[in-house]
Image (cartoon, rainbow, N blue to C red; front, side, top):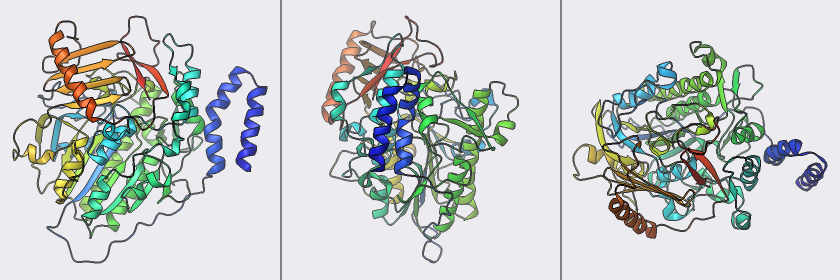
Length: 561
């Protein structure tokens, strides 16, 4: 009854107000409804299930810690910041804000282990990439093609940007075919890494961002995780915006940012229970609780999936981190840089917990990001040296830091420069645990450590494939093809000679375009129909941020979701 009355009140308000106020209410509507339906309690203590008291398991299967950053720019780390083109160089880079924020803890995973010099994401947005990581399969194989978003968000985004030079397309005729947000999830019939490792005897722990379905059958504890602490949606506040410890940086030009500020809560839940407010800045909170989970499980094999939401918007930093970066003048960049500082500290907290509990030697630590940095942060150079952003299949959207550390099995300062991808993390972790891969389905990933040690020769992948609606991409060898319907355009790049995609060869090499389009079409035949259709398509400029207007001669794509 309370929800019905709320809906009636909103309808009355929409009828009686002007356009400006209507826009603000449309932005705030999802958050209003969610807070009424699911109120947030004060901080609650978290208790991790203790492991049985058993003798030391020295020499047993390794623990596996998989750390995923959120929207991390390729240039944000001091180890891999400026990249190395096709992957043949040193990999050393300046890091965010010209090196103002060292990232020694994240860097140490590569320096003490192996850097995969050409790491690729599963997609150019959050959810399909996470699905690729956790299933070892292209998400398009099982229809999980688009990032779950509410219909109201898609409609509001299209309406607010209706005056753009190339406005978004909203597909009214598809609305009924799109399920409610909570029902947009990875099918329960998929086998997640957590399910695979739990069957192998691992205790499975998830922390942070889920974004793979909110209904009960899609939630982490229904998809193989024994315990989960975090949030089910695609983003979260890092602190309450009015907290005296926080610095907020809002992007007035970005409707996504305005939507997040209007609707997000600062809240987590444990194992699907009621939401409550953490007692610390979200990045530090998740890292601290990951360390507590490690302590509780030090006497048994565990899989820890730690999905930080940093540095995804909304941009919020601890004042203490912000104040430590006085050399950065731009307040937005300074806030973003402070978030990177906290992210590196959080990774350090987890690595320190492994050392303190005597687990470092026999723990496989994997680090990556779900996709590249987005244009809507409004900061140039975050994916340097690559073109493109999140929501594009240019290298800036799908190239990612990709590191692994396992002192017992991986020599320090190792490097492997064949193209690898998120789908490989599943098979790599499975092999480390001694788990057999599922035999009843195609697994697109392979064990990277076996390749890096030279135990298996030949290319890691014959081809890598990406798709989001009408927009598709293929990499085979050093050739990369991108095909879009909106705009009607084909790009062809030779990444060996042109790793940053500056010279489009589609016009000069029609025979290569035809060859790769044929390979792309054959791969497409293996994929499933999307579980639901894309509801909106919006423009993303390739070479500048959303803070700058789209000009007539700009290269762009329409990203479907």
